[in-house]
Image (cartoon, rainbow, N blue to C red; front, top):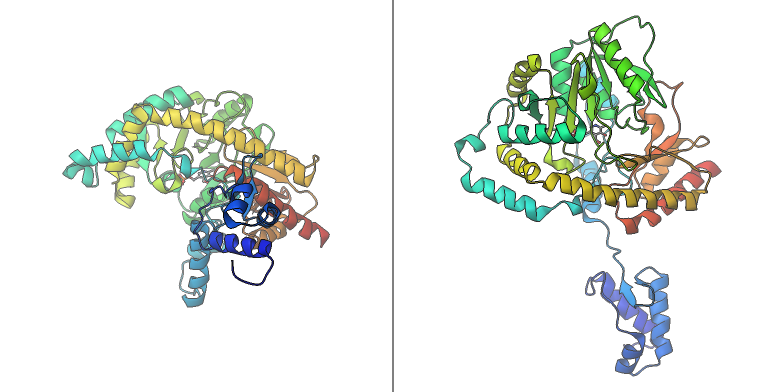
Length: 481
Ligand SMILES: Cc1ncc(COP(=O)(O)O)c(C=O)c1O
């Protein structure tokens, strides 16, 4: 400390500079005030002033009288990469020219739904990957690679790795109430690929698919790319409300019965039974997307629809994206026995197989009980995180705020009947917060509702209050204007 500024300011400046330069790591405890004052030969009040100012300005925090700790204020590297990447790309990439694209491509691109930002508060559908048991996974991968021969490094069999299908069929029978043998499982690279196979194999361009309204944007994109006609069917508190006498029969009915996306409604048993009968009468296939129902916070997970379809007309899709991590790109279909061969051949013709070492590691992960243990542990973490987010929303937006869809999964929805949710979403994004507008999930403008779909799976507890503060500002700025 050598300048002419007051000592307390010099001390504040020195510590702040060390924190900003990364010389003092987040979580480091600053020396006790008395000790530092003695060491520097200055008054304790001088140190107290500097520490208070550091805390006021967010460089440090005091934890219940146990001392002053350096906060983690560095930007999330993944978020930063993404932002720098996209600003860099914006400056260097040529403007898109769609004039030579197909009509299908134009349709797909003009309705694209995937967000550019895939990390941070409150991207829906992202699990907390920091909790993934990397040590166990690394051991399993290493074990597989020790003995992996030509077979495991090639395209593999058409259906996927047999031990994975055996482990999965055992797990799903117990945990999800599916009715299946290992042969009925076809492994795919994610849910979108599974939906795409259904669209290509069970319908022709121009055929009709019924989708819940609101619905997962990704399913719509895949059906659109396959050239299918889509009709949004309303959802009430019991799930999809099937039309009494439709003019055109659907070929496919796409549903999320265990946790309607994004509303969170759980389809009632009478509605499930009605759906299986109606599908059978129309000779339509039901596609059940069971994407995150392991995370149910009120009571045990509900059995799936496929297991209670007396007509065996339901194709089940499961994914590892929510329980393990999305970049794994592994999902699976459970198809009726008479369709297995068609799906397996098509899978290998259109996409080819592969990823057998990962499938082998995953088989071990499930068979050794790690999968069930991880689900159980994460369920507790997400339940606490959901409670924390709900509390913060109520605290900052007022008790009267209407929050729906909190029983299951990794997201909830805040209804905003009096605000334009797309404007709120844009204002939030300008503050680095992803809050997808509920209205964007609806096909029909007359049914549409305003709200924000907020994912909390990948948001650390300590980030929640700050992120809700930014969200509240965005809502206030839109409602004020
Ligand atoms: C309803 C729903 N189904 C499927 C998926 C995607 O699963 P996958 O990562 O296996 O493609 C998501 C992802 O957010 C989803 O919300």
